[in-house]
Image 1 (tube, rainbow, N blue to C red):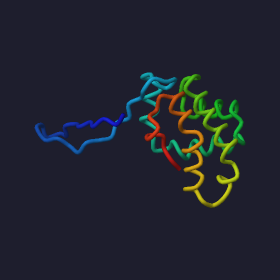
Image 2: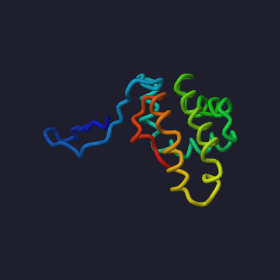
Image 3: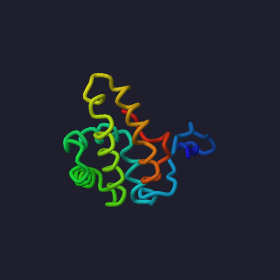
Length: 130
């Protein structure tokens, strides 16, 4: 769910622009510590996913260790993202090795995002794309 969030700047009585806030649904990452990590590192997410998944050649256990070390997500939350890595390697490896990043992203969205959303609790439309 995307919720609007507004904050007051230093001058009281004037509202700033709204900011996008990501709210988790039921899932392994739907807890305060994991949600805090998510929001703090969202800008780095896609690059980190590619680095950990690619560096681990799509191997789930290796990815989980990389994810835990890199961000400090909970074990359960990291296991969900490890499954996403494994899924993308299983279904999208050939297309993702090619030069078309949009095609790679779409393959992962089509084949892996539904299970990622169900496991993590991150709404499907908010899972970052490459």
